[in-house]
Length: 304
Length: 299
Image (cartoon, rainbow over all chains, first blue to last red; front, side, top):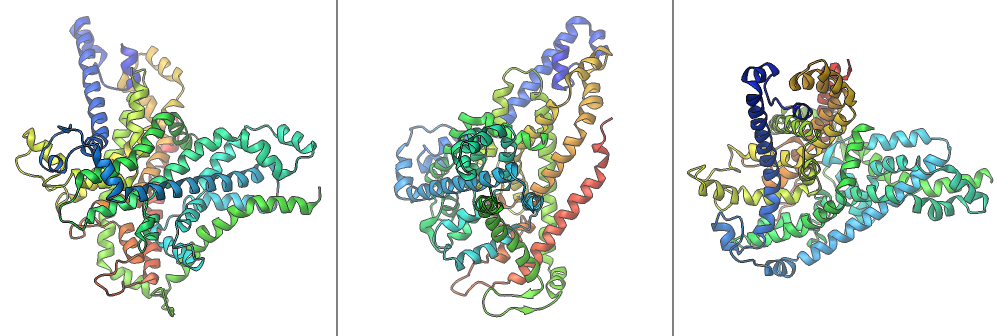
């Protein structure tokens, strides 16, 4: 018991001497009380964490009147057609397609650009290599906020990419430094003998990259792809800026946030909740399947 | 293999990365460093004005108000996030039953879009038909609707929303740090008769020092930079009470056109504000790093 509480770092029996003074039964009682307090605390935090998500899910299945008036947690009758309505009326079909298109393109692009760069950096020596790596590292730390969006946006206007989602996609891909460093770590685990022998057999450097290296890099690509996808899918300000003039390009995050200024006075709260669900649920499903990978990479960032 | 083949292969694989980094990472920074000395409305001519933008910045009370709000917001967020995530990490580092499940639950908010959850918070913290007030009133915890997004409490509400999204992330970082502390230290201390609290303060805290220093630094930077959720929940209002500096900056660079008239674009001034905000974040980070230098020593 004592060791368990110690590992938890909680002041369960206040001091050993106290326990001794109360005798064996007293110490045991204090330990049980301590555990109860600990669990109440943990469950309270878990409840607060889940509450907004739960409200989104159940709220999306209520009628608007019930949602606005009730103070209920579960709907009295489940309104699944809210989703059909949000999908058709509030344009969520369009938003979802845009989100999928943008996120998939940005993820694939990020992985390819970063993997190719990491391949050269790990396997070859070339002049300016440390300059390149330093540049990548520095882009992760300099932050002047939304200012850089302005020249980025103007550049995309000049390239005639501002009227499609490709402007957003290219900017998302340009932020591939963290993916680059994650993949660089995975390259260290691929033995050089493998690609060297492939090259002895006549496979070129680039051919070796996509025939030998990319398949071996699959675990690294999977993990960093999760992160790139999460980043793109949840991005708000970039697609907001690029779709100010063209609502047909809005992604789920932008389209949903814009519903706050609904044209009609009565907000369709339940439909907004359904839209929020459409945006949150795909990521939650991915998270449930792969939460270990998410946590590993996050933890890896401080373990270095 | 000739040198040229090598060079061609290297460039082919490296160029996409280099071009994107230079065009969309480096060039914008140079743009900011240049235009902060100019008067530039985004079209037509640009005039060199020297330090005029910075002189104006010193007199810009709205900006300094937003800096003050940033400190309140970041301070509040840190005060909730750091202790709570550390406590959760210490508890879940033990041999508690269900710890894997609880870790997954607490980390879950990090996969949810900040903007989307801000919309949800905006809806459920609504004073009159928001679910939070409805539930609190149903169970008689409050008598009348609490104005979560009113001028008095809006800052508290945006802090709560930001903390909600951040606790799980820092919990996981703390956990990673805790797991690198060798277990025999605790066993040796237990044999020597150290109680749980003693072990926490004498082993966990000092051993965690270097990692904790970095985690808190990341938390400080993130809380000074975050403005997405505020933008969605309050847009800096009501009456500028939640306007943080990065939101103020965004509004300068992407002004909203009001009723037909073209928006007033001041990219030169915006660049000066952007540079200043980055310097402010840099100074705070450096000051923290200097003040926390003791944490870096493992005894």
